[in-house]
Length: 290
Ligand code: C2E
Ligand code: MG
Ligand code: MG
Ligand code: MG
Image: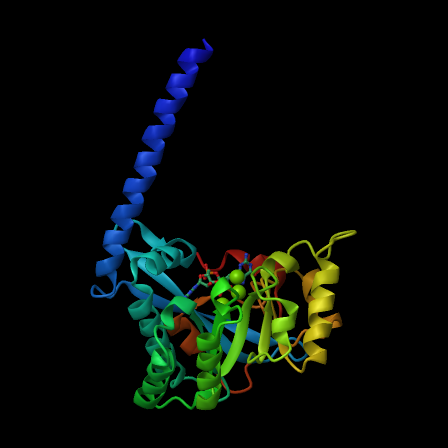
C-alpha cells in the first residue's frame, strides 16, 4: 500500500542520508590528517596559446591520494576543506609547492595556482603569505598567476579590493576563474584588478552545436575581454570544433583535453622545454589522466 511504501521510503531515505553524512564526516577527519601524512599532490595542466600552440603556463590542480579510496577529486574535498578551516594550510601548501616546482621549468613557463577567497584571512594576511612564499622559493612574481573563483566574497568588498591591489603590487597576475558562472557583475569589470578571464567549461560544452545558446556567450565574453584589454582562457576545450570556435573568437589561451589532461608533476617536468608546442589531438586523448 501507499502507506507501507511511504514508510519504507522514509526509512530508506533516513539510512541513506545518515550514511552520506557519516561518510562525509569520516572524509573530513581523514582530510585533517592528510596534509601531515603528505597525501596531497599537484598535477599540472598545460595552458596553450591558441594562435601558436605554444605552452605558456600550467595550472596546478590538487589531487588527494587517499590510502583506501584512491585519487579523490578536488571538487569533492575543496568544499570540505573550506568548511573545516583547512583551506588555509592546504592552499598555502599548493602555493608553495607550485612555486617550488615552477623553478625547475623553463623560465618562460608561468604557474597558475587556484585560490579560495576563504584563504584571504584578515587585512593583508594573504598578501604576506604570497610575498613570503615568493621570497622563500625565489620564483619571480611575474611567473605566478593566482586564479580566483567568482564568488559572493568578491562583490564590492573593500578588504578584498585592498588584497587584490596588494597582490598586484607584488607583481603577480590575477585571473578570474569560472567566469560567467558566479556572482560578479559586468560593472565590477570596469575597474577590475584581473588580467585574465577564464571562460568556464560549461559555456564551451555544446557551444558548437546547432543553435547553441552557449556560443553567443563565448563570443560576447571574448570580445568584451578584448575591449577591456584583458586576456582570456577557454577551459575544457575537447574537440576540434570547439578549438576552431575559440580561435575564431580570438580567445588568447586554451586549456583542455584536446591539448593535454592534467599531468603528474614528474611527467610535466619531463615534457617541459623551451619553445614547447603541443599539437591538438582531439577526443582521443581524453582518457589520458587515468
Ligand atoms: P578549475 O580551477 O576551474 O580547474 C579546471 C578543471 O577542469 C580541472 O578539474 C581540470 O582537470 C578540468 N579540465 C581541464 N580540461 C578539461 C577538459 O577538456 N574537459 C573536462 N571535462 N575537464 C577539464 P579538477 O582538477 O577536478 O579541479 C576542479 C576544481 O577544483 C578546480 O576547477 C578548482 O576550482 C578546484 N581546485 C583544484 N585545485 C585547487 C587548489 O589548489 N586550491 C583551490 N582553492 N581549489 C582547487
Ligand atoms: Mg582554476
Ligand atoms: Mg576554472
Ligand atoms: Mg571550472
